[in-house]
Amino acid sequence: MSEHMALENLTVLDLTRVLAGPFCTMMLADMGANVIKIEVPKGGDDTRSYPPFRAKNLNGERESVYFANINRNKKGITLNLKAPEGKEIFKELVKKADIVVENYRPGVMDKLGLGYDVLKEINPRIIYAAVSGFGCYGPYHLRPGYDILAQAMGGMMSITGSKGGEPTRAGSALGDILGGLHVTIGILAAVNARTITGKGQRVDVSLMDSMIAATENTALKYLETGNIPAPMGNRYAAVSPYDSFTCKGGKVIIAAGNQKLYEKLCNEVLERPDMITDPRFVDMPGRLANQDAIAEVIEERIKDLTPNEAAELVLAHGIPAGPIMNIKEILDDPHVKEREMFVEMDHPTLGKVTVNGCAIKLMDTKPSVRTPAPQLGQNNRDIFEGVLGMTEEQFNTLHEKQVF
Image (cartoon, rainbow, N blue to C red; front, side, top):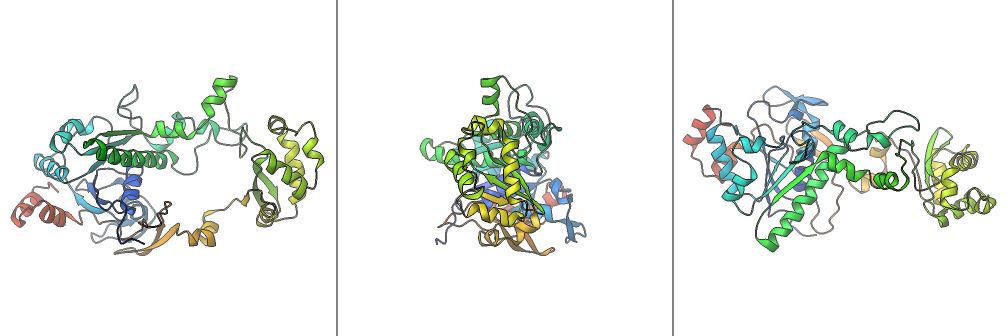
């Protein structure tokens, strides 16, 4: 394995708060980018006040495990971008950076005099990435946006929930996470484009767009049939049997996603070869129209099996299946442990804390959790004196003026 990291040659100025932007910069930092998180001098990122809390920091304030998880591997500085001196310091940092990431409402950075049009004159190679609720243009672009709005207006809630039930928000902040993933991909595409053109560019990602993209063929179903897709519980409109099925003490997922798998299920698991030639089930449209009848046969077969036993039975015949796992079961799972999807991190005030691992596995330049999330302004002196060459006198004067 290489001693290098995939993105170690990139410096990122991270102006983001809460989740979508910080998730993006966390991924970049996990892969080795030099991420400098820039926070307001008083209070910092909103998520410093998000639970759960375990301890108090060096200032006697509650230390958020939430913040620690999403901001690991980053350096941290404070900077008042409304102060003239703060603007100049930021511009000096831009000269030395590759990427700026921000998730302010569109127009905020322009009002500060720090928008892309200004920054590209300072550094033509700068990649300026903005992730916001509704993007940098369009009728809604000035609206504030949170994950739940993206899920609602991006269509995800309209297809999530129990059949016949109310539209439901997904259990995690999918709009933020997918927005963060999309802006990460956009940044890396812009980095590669820069090797071709020699110039940076603007990357614009919206949570609403990211959510619409995640609804996959929902629009196609409506456009082709005229029917508006609605919540279906755990079923899927294109494949059957593909659902959760009740067994002893819980439910198991069985996904016979094509004709071959369906025939194996009927022959080898259900021992009902007649279900292959039954006119109701002979093809996918028929199986979709008769899902309840198929479910009745499956649930009769597995009624005395636990979810794990039912999954093992079905898996033994090469058919995808698995239990519905809660977070305790996931943390205890040997596969999850070997894949390092949760890792232990040493933190100066929290002690040892378990955080999410990196889902991207690079075999030669392995992503990793190396350093804890910074205390507010922890690296001010390192960056302002060590990187920008500020004297101690200048540092102290600007600190007294609350520029950082």
